[in-house]
Length: 293
Image (cartoon, rainbow, N blue to C red; front, side):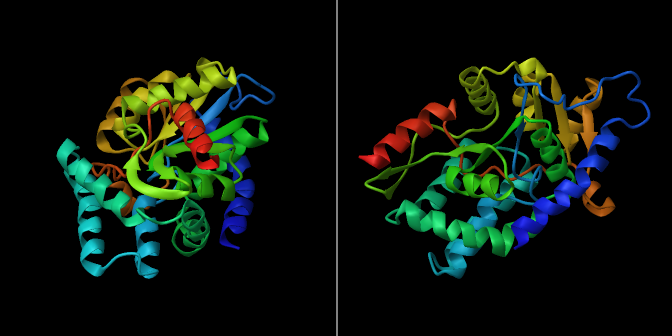
């Protein structure tokens, strides 16, 4: 399957990724990631970092194919995603409209149904869009015995599917409210975006007993600078213009896996999808308990 093929390609690329990290100019810098370091972990943004494009948009395409909504809704949904990518301005009212649109699509559907469909959509639209280079970086952490989490603005159900298919530890993402296993069309908490991502990572690190100075974080967007600034090993992956400038100023490591044409468009940020609750582990536990009642 496409997911397994991606994982195999990542394993083959792991050595190349490690060699890249030790490229000329690294000097006497010790090998990273450090094997056997139980206090270290890695946190990966999803959209345009691990996967080309926005996971929420690809998920929307799959739902449209299954007649969850009509063409006019797809057009509006696509426009909202394009706005975030092109404008680079996160207007609160516009973001709220995008979240409401996404939540209205799943309202009344069962959580189990969306999880099952998410597996199919991953194979149809997402598996081939995983960046092999980023996948290899994640695999290097796994091979070193470290845990690896996705930290994303995408719905947690999508994030969990992707994390599981890639063999990662887990994911923090949108916590959509459900009662008796049925989506209500509301969020639990607020979007996991910007500083909220840093709060979620900090909370997860505390729960896991991690030393953030020994951890790594990876993102394409300047919106994730708070998360990247938390860890001792920040990486700018396929960075937008603001993140590239910030990373160079602080001597952060950069990786760009795009083609030359796409890499030239570094001013286009990742789409801001539906968010997750800050400090997402607590919200996920609360939601899990509610579902089991």
